[in-house]
Length: 221
Image (cartoon, rainbow, N blue to C red; front, side, top):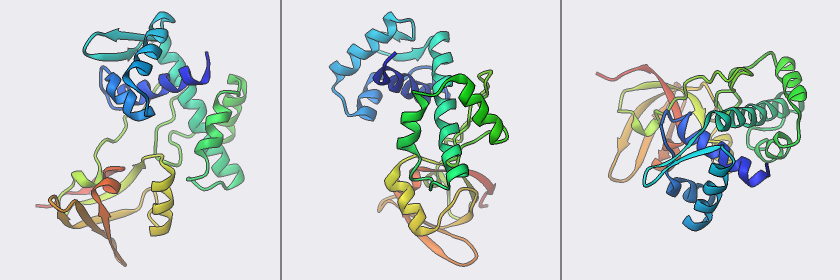
């Protein structure tokens, strides 16, 4: 299986299993990769022939049992490599993705199991994404973003989108995983939300806020 095929498998995994959806729409794949619909359809057909994808006309794509097994292997490898680079070599969370992309395709299961053991069998990577177990158990993924909250809600950031520009911005603003904030203002029309902690107040755009996922600590009355 080549790298392009593996990237499609991971994408469908993220759009279905992690979002608790039955199917991934082909236009979602086209948007994710920046490809034409024709290019996406050709890859989908190829992976259907290989028994990795199941395709429902006019509805979308899902992973077969074999496809799910392969997706979990790759996602587990990728996220363990990211965490290993962070913990063992002090790579920042905005620096690990590209190298993990290369390493995940090259490492044997024996190496990945050794990294898992070395790290103490972690459940999440440094972006807050769940690391599937060797047996394929996957923790539920938070889909509630900061922009879904209301004024007065108190929350903890538990997952962020693995996007380099976003992570660099969070570094600049000193916003980290597991930080706790309260929503102090929100404007749906202008598309911004203001969060605060004990020492500061930060205004986030709608786009940034939609990429930060939370666990509610207290809900406004």
